[in-house]
Length: 140
Ligand code: HEC
Image: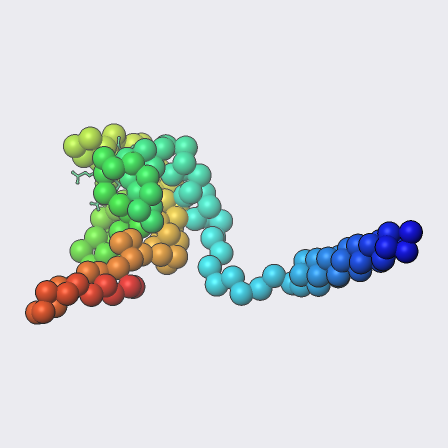
């Protein structure tokens, strides 16, 4: 009988510790997220991106279809950028279909791609071959 009481006491203590731990953990304000928020226009661009299934052929952060190139850093690319990207949307090239976006829609797509560009790199590493034959990896 006495042993049973002891078990119940231990169980109660464990439940109390668990409850306190959860209270402390989940009542803390969430902070530390450094990802910039998406603007309304960028969100609109994301919607256009999804509705037109750009991911079927393009990758973002290395994920997506492989018919077209990865577009993660197209905006900050030294020879490409927003004007270059916009030129592709409605012209249609090789296996990319010709879209019929308005200027507002094109701008929204560019803002979405700008947001993606600010939040990651792809590929996020460079491999360099040393004179000694070793490969060193440099992460961006
Ligand atoms: C059916 C496949 C397909 C779909 C869907 C598609 N694309 Fe493309 N896209 C391509 C291909 C292939 C290329 C490469 C064309 C070339 O360089 O000759 C390309 C090129 C591009 C480029 C230029 C990339 C560069 O680095 O030169 C941009 C920007 C682009 N597409 C944006 C989009 C957007 C935005 C959408 C959705 C609205 C989209 N594409 C939908 C196949 C596609």
